[in-house]
Length: 238
Image (cartoon, rainbow, N blue to C red):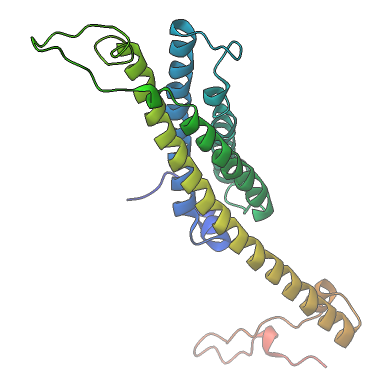
């Protein structure tokens, strides 16, 4: 299947990084997961504020805290994709940017997941106690059961789904962070090699690589078959 990208952009992408399709797909998936997680935690926080009173103050900061890595992922990934494909047209972005950004995102995911799990309302779920006749009395023993407080289970289920997507965001950005660390090491190695080659040329020929290249004779062009004429480029330069 052909991509809608121009041939020159694809060539630059493959020259810069052979794994660019995998990384682009991972960032697109992370964006989608971040969008879903944002909706889920926003709904959970809204329902909790409407139905419960937080003794520690207004708002549910354990669910609200998760929005930090989610929003960063939701903003950073589309920006990277657009810059790489449409602004720079395939020219590689320095991987050091990805090292910093992905580190921040997956680093924020860890405490967000811990606090979201620790403060989740799903810990208040309890089995329903039925009477002998099969009825349920919403007393002390059933106050947090599903028949007596169904919104608690709606919020808890929404929190669990949001935590799952947040964990997937963590896995994706940690993977992209590892890729970025490897790319940064390659980038530095290539820059060091280019610097050493430039130094060797300057040391040997006492001129810059650009000047050295400009003084090179043109490539030999063989004469046309049967013409009996020697091409100009075949003349030896003293």
